[in-house]
Image 1 (cartoon, rainbow, N blue to C red):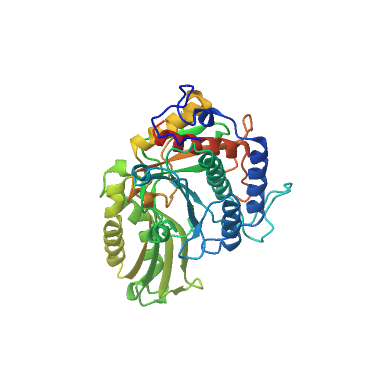
Image 2 (image 1 turned 90 degrees about the vertical axis):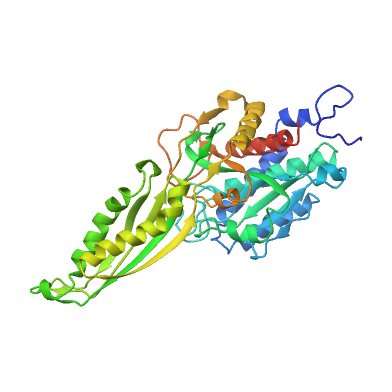
Length: 417
């Protein structure tokens, strides 16, 4: 069969692979992908420990005749689809990459009646990474079949990234392993339990927030609670840091940046009549704006030192960089819109808000343009929402087909159809 370039037509005058762009996912593949997702769901693995998951993905890609490469970190893979029979001018053009994250969360699976609930204590795919992984695998298998038929106009890269849930995220290690070499743009999906299965949410610009971690130690000479004036009243100093630092920071940046400090842990003291010598606090710093996020460490350090100093407490600050916001490129976002419209119609797309969650997909977008879509996983008509990072989270598995169709169509449209 003659290999078609991205702008050639076949004998009937149709665009190349147009039937693949519009065709339904075969029932056999749909059934296989659901089973694959359930197997991952039953065997969740934490970041940088995803050895079983990596082996399962690698085996299926090799079965399809592909040549995946395990990343330098020992888990995760990268795999190119197509390009072997294309003219050199088409293989040197930058590729589109499809990215999935493969790790799970350190929380118990609390679903009471589910045949595929986690078999690993205190581990669960409660953020939908098993769905993301299955979607990219499924798209890769569809594209590999098109390539065998001579109908894949341009190579596509599959990225299965470990450790998304581990700050500052496994994306940085994946990039260091060369997954973006030869890539011109990158796309991803993230499960959204507020959106019905069969639909996606899109947004130009920031779609997630920056998320950093903050750990603070406060120290000072303790003493008797009868004589706080002779000590550093460390509990009061800690309380002032907790209550005043967020407000102080909020007054030093544009309010539209959404820079916010939220505390999650405070520890100090052991008994009621002793002023302690040591206190610890930890929390998160979240930010909607990329420029404000870059200023955040200096602002946070200054505010903590200022408040702690007023109360004669010595502060030691460990500011742990997490991830910047995911900022969707408008052109790549429109590629996703066109792909979803081609497969499911414009009514299957809705606008989505910027969330306060963090996502290390943002590190890829520091290097190449890209976009993330919200993949609807709520069963239509279902009342209530099973939120992400909750032990009872589950996804409507019809979303897998939607994701595969979205990525397949995007790859074909990006190739010039």
